[in-house]
Image (cartoon, rainbow over the protein chains, first blue to last red):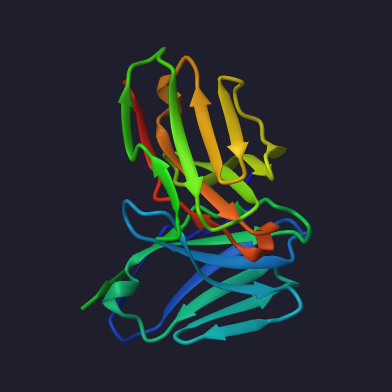
Length: 112
Length: 113
């Protein structure tokens, strides 16, 4: 029973353009959302997060948007760079919960 | 380097064997986790310890047993390995609940033949 879903397994984008990664969740108790980035043979590393009391959080080239009513969030990367080629995981947690629930990831390839 | 380190990075073993994966963190975090990434790439939580106390124990076969000798270490022992246990196992740590994010180790790729 996957409570966090990333329906696009892969995304290819040209360098300099925008990458948009989508994530849907089903558990209405989730109130904190995180994005992780993973390179091959490495562990996931934290990228950006957003609390359910916000609808947008920005950090440099990365912006996460949250639509609570739709139970949907997205990660925008602009402009995309070759070093952004990686697997991106969406994760969610409820307040006071230690567990993070992850999606299956989206593989982003940035073309030169 | 401050990090979460797990050993070994690769483990190839025969069915029926018993093996252990070790994890150590020097971040001073109070909570540690084991996640399994299966062939479909989902990251699924297995166990979590907070200050040496088991706080999350998901539905996994009882052939899997975690052990936390202190809050900086969390080991995973697997008895009677099966083909379906082949996966990448990630250790992680956090200071507090999941909303504060995890720091992951680089993973252990277990292959059962």
